[in-house]
Length: 162
Image (tube, rainbow, N blue to C red; front, side, top):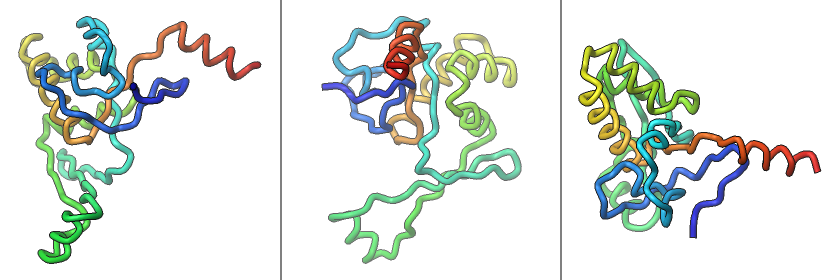
């Protein structure tokens, strides 16, 4: 049972925890499929969750994450008068990566940016960016969109014309 995908290849930003430690194991649209190659993983496109408010101040991004509603969480929030949103401040490196998770830049271009900007080796940049993207995805702050293939584009065009 996989997530429904439209012609643009987007999937809902819901995340299930996996037993494996890889970046792709917990993504809903990847469940039950073979593990992607390294090249496929580098072509994935990170997309920010539209439900989050954020702004940039002094080179750092501030995120406002809505708290869960309903049930026990709602009761605890009322008793302790918790705010409706949780604030998360990203450092300069994380802010740069966050801004590139715009639905246009793929993981490869984010790696290139981090490697150049912070003078890291290719391996250091790859490990740090993949770990950071995994954390953002586990917290449901981003989702990963599969790159559009030529066959999917053709299928979408034929469905829209007929």
